[in-house]
Image (cartoon, rainbow, N blue to C red; front, side):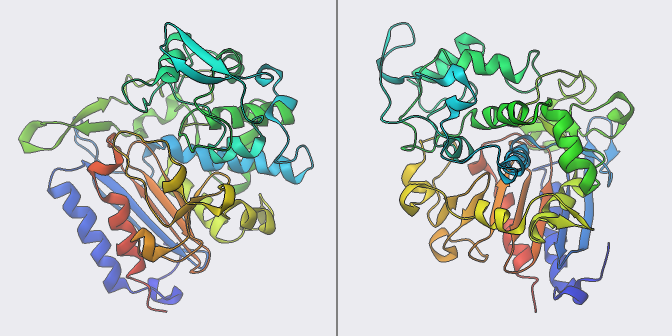
Length: 412
């Protein structure tokens, strides 16, 4: 830890509520283990491990355990693209096709089935802003938005890749260019492959592979030494196992989902997924979150301008609407009122309407393995929760619990 909680207006006694609850998750058999971290005013004041990082091997959770952060990759890759925005490489309302010729002439699904479908012209072209806000009309091969989701079926048939696959982001772009959109750009918030396209834009505009760009412009400046696409061989001993709900041994409520010894993340690859391809430690992500809470700078390294970051964390949904108004229905997800979406982050607009203890302007996101982080600029607060449990968001209350247990510890 970098300071005592009381030095930054937090209560040590109240933070013990957080420790007890996370320990309860483990004792109740909900998860094998976790790491919680809290920073305020630039100082980490709580960093705690609990339980196991590999139940089968009986390995205690290590402070430097490496986690699959899945969709917590998205804010990092979105910030990378906005670094290039600061350099004048593009404008947010530029058509995506200006940089991706394959996207010129994209059509929208008008009806039919995956075997026989019709398309129509979109109401307007997809923009770079649409990609950052998930409003571009792109779908997902991994998530079906209902049993008759034709576009998801077409993605699957075309072999639109995901995390840990061979190929490159360029391969995905070529495939997407020949497939219809799910909706008109700017009309629906669809959680799909948009951030893979954002990652490809980083490659096009910078002239560098996404992994090399992130190392050079974000990870090395911030001291995020253990964050990367794929886990290198020398670090596999620190790679946590991943689980999913099920009837486990000894009454535990989980079973192994991804063995670190045979994981696709351990095999190496060339597909640098902006959607969810990164792995990293809790300590690394806390450094990223501290930078965000500090307006884009950490320990003398500025990776994004303060005003740019403030702009990114405004609500960019059209007409100032809420996420619940525009979100494509998804299995296991409940639309949340009082929440908007910025350029890579969800944004808390109204804590009362969202029924979320917090401050307006807080921004956050989660990963598929139940990881979560949030940053409150108003409170100078950043929190990270790391575990490895693949489950629908509605199944567990981890992120909501952590929010309450951190905010209730603020006393100044």
